[in-house]
Length: 175
Image 1 (cartoon, rainbow, N blue to C red):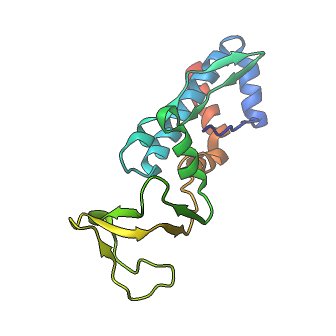
Image 2 (image 1 turned 45 degrees about the vertical axis):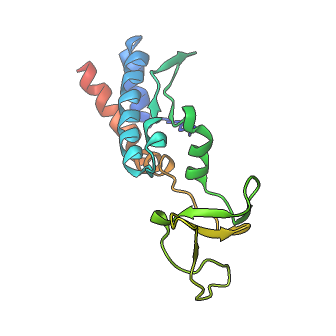
Image 3 (image 1 turned 120 degrees about the horizontal axis):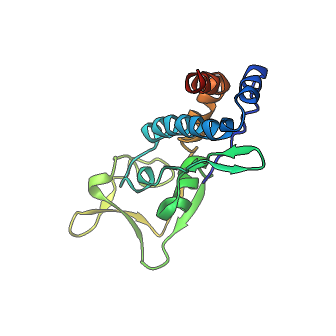
């Protein structure tokens, strides 16, 4: 999953870049990379953790230069790519039906209690013979999930001040 942010700099940023000449693009790439690393650090703080696979796939790529533009990409991927999108964007309510088993079950040690059926009755859950699983039935109705926006939120939080921070970084380099 990748989110693209284009910084169309303030007039001050553009003027500073024009004055600096050929080194400008390389230094802008370094500054963008540093900012992306800060955003990724915040993103990983907000990333939900179950096994840690998703969080461990966060990356920031080295700057790429093309036609007077510099691009720095960041995101989550690898083995967690399909999962990353679902956790970030969420999904709507849906039914889950057992395909390779007679019933669906949840580990008893992760069961948070509450009624098992959709009508919220006071019926106690049924446990497997060994007591390790809560039996849910042939079909369950999942309520859906809103998504965590663990990358989009840090990007949006950083965006309003990004041009000013890039300008400061470039000034420090060239002064």
